[in-house]
Amino acid sequence: MSQQPNKIPKGIVNPKSKGKSQPRLHASMRKDTVKASDFLKYDMRSSCEDCSHFDPEKIVCTIGYNPALHLKAEQTHQYFLSGNMAFCRFIEID
Ligand code: SF4
Image 1 (spheres, rainbow, N blue to C red):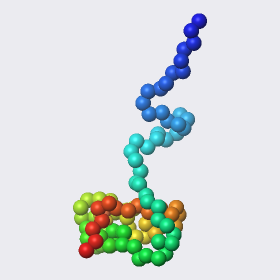
Image 2 (spheres, helix red, strand yellow; image 1 turned 90 degrees about the vertical axis):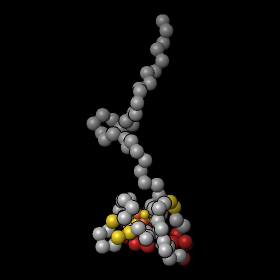
Image 3 (tube, rainbow, N blue to C red; image 1 turned 180 degrees about the vertical axis):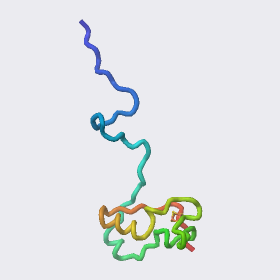
Image 4 (tube, rainbow, N blue to C red; image 1 turned 90 degrees about the horizontal axis):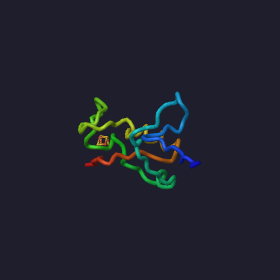
């Protein structure tokens, strides 16, 4: 009598049990670690408020990106929570 190999399910396997939310199918925002000494030492220009593409009246990015994670208040909040910040790769400072 031959032993059947373990069945390997196809597709994405939900590591949680049935009825739980499905795993994310896309990558989340990548955040970079900032050293605490650098955060305290430098006046960083890394938020939408410092960017040429930002419209402060409408609080929108004029080239179409979502500014929610790159606003100064949100970056600071995330930094205090985790030591990480989401930097926009398209920031342009005059
Ligand atoms: S390019 Fe990036 S940093 Fe500049 S306004 Fe848009 S989302 Fe914000």
